[in-house]
Image (cartoon, rainbow, N blue to C red; front, side, top):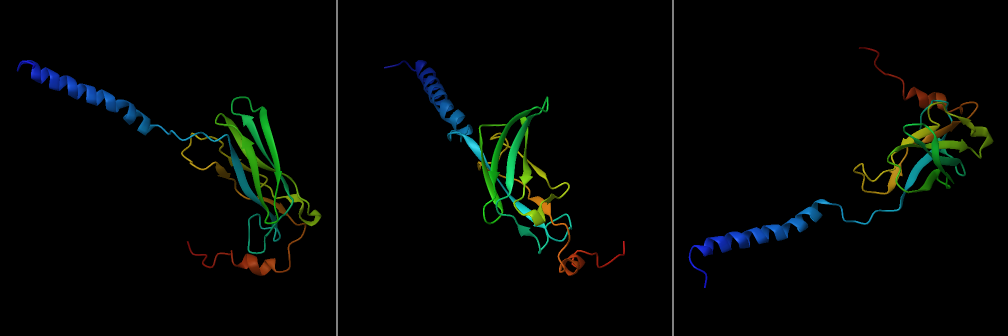
Length: 174
């Protein structure tokens, strides 16, 4: 049996061993141990600006069969690093699979073409949308949502005047 002066030393040693044994579990609890996904899915919609408003309205329609690509460029040089193509489904929605991590690149969804000849002109400022393709940004899903991309008709629909009145300011007072 241990002598009385050795008892506090044994208790201290036992406590230290227990504390050291708990460090690996504490360290692993702070890390994300889920397996990394191989890539991402960029999802967005392509719409037709039927009122020439420059934004989506109740009269806007969504374009099936529109071609879209996701393009990534180097942040430092601006050189194109990769491109992934896709097209919209019957709801005007595209889901483009993108391989790997692109943390150090600038990636965007970009309009390519519209199958609708009557709605084939690109809406200025709505031809591309940035997407962040990294797991190092706090987003847990591998689906990345892009803002809607737009084409426009050559002339507005007859009902558009009434629709655009909804967007006018009612009160001009400041």
